[in-house]
Length: 397
Picture (cartoon, rainbow, N blue to C red):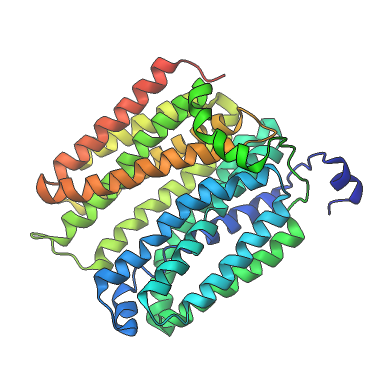
């Protein structure tokens, strides 16, 4: 437990392993909250007396809210205690999810999804906390554990949400998610450190400084460029896969396409391993190995979509390589200013997420108009460019 002296002095508290694993669980559940309604979109539309397209637009407000959360909420953990910020975000998220369970119109659903999306940026906030409070020699390891939670949340949100919606209906399913957020809010107030950040600049000045960080810090700029490139590629491949498999000659159902997401489990394992290896051999080596594995896997997958087993293996290697690179890359961002890493992480994740959004749009469009091979080989080329950027930039300092 944190002592009163520790809170007054502002001295950092080393993160115990149990606390890091709780942060990983919290990051997983927080990240998952913008995804559970996606598999049940048809049921939601029928319940609200609306079209699937309108509900789809409303659910898309979740990622929009996530961008808002990255910009406005994540920097708060540089100034306030993790206990207060994370507990409040989960409390608001629980209330918003409970409201979502009783909505009667698409407009309200969209507005609430913005709030949920903003609060779901808690995963990025928790990774910033790991960067600030973990011991330097264990920073990437702690980051890898928390990031594995984020990766698990992306997968679990859809899988758990879809299964519960089938069992108890979408409204009751959302209430389950709300209840879990309430429990995690309570756990955050009990377990997370209360050490306040030492950031001296004002909150508005912090927000204004986010774009400047990319200009002022070469390491930040390189990390953002390569991260944006490979997240573009990541989202392009998965969007292209959904389009390709839904059309002839495959014509898979949504459930069948969703099973391909099981390949994403490799990414969860990779983040844990990548964190410990980054602490041992350095970020640059882990990034390059991850990009080589991912680029090669994407190049092969571009010509094997008709062979399910080979495609799944390629997707697993692709995910593992990029998630490993992400942990190592993010560790270089958090190390720029270990005393106040959240604004750097916020700026980085904004570029990263914008790259992914553009990649998803590209992947779906390219697969529909030019075919699977063109979309995926293009993604492999972008991964190769990210590797070249890493080589040209030289060793991370």
